[in-house]
Length: 336
Image (cartoon, one colour):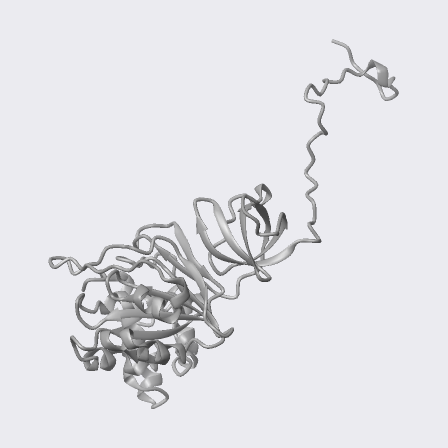
């Protein structure tokens, strides 16, 4: 076996020829300092539709991003063909830091979390008052996900011509959640859209709801120029509608009034990824009372300091009940 000393002649060193004739691979990645910023509008089978200035650009994720995925609402940096012309494709080379994230898991035992929407300011939870019946546990789960992800909740109740909203309002009244009540007639004549639009101006709002509650119908009323196919059928046995929205889509409100993000109808909303300690941040009247709680307190145990905090008159007992109901929602099924 031949060995080389310190001072070898370069001609004596064997080199492997580059048969392809291309440059050797390197770990140095381009900085893409000329990349343009865009907003992800929708994602479909690896292709991302982005808004770059006033142009709609089709793009794909660059290989250097690895497993990191962009979702609707993400602010991204793009390079390549940004003309928006037919059959052109840009590349997403960076995903900007997210201000908020709405996440869910398939169920409470699934460790894999899915990011539904990024950078939304508000989560509009749409529920029908009848046909299908309201599902408070699903609403609770959406509220927990909103509080955990940094979104402000908005409760939108539809089909008030079939049932009164009083019972549902009483259940969520102590959470101080803004709400809108609509009927089918108001959706048809535009009154409902006008009232809902007052809560959306200048904000990015993600709409989420059980299939068949009228979520996409409401979105179509808010953004009539971008109508999406709606469900007209609710199963009489299960009370469930058929999914007609198959992917999340960001739509601009008229007059630079904000954005609406329509998401597919959900039948479950897993919270396996939620850290219960973050939910308390949505209750500023109760949060100071946790200072004397034992370490890793679940806020629903005999030694919890929140009981004494409420007894001392610092907060309404109904608020503590609401907090504990939300924290316990992971241990219940959504149909309870």
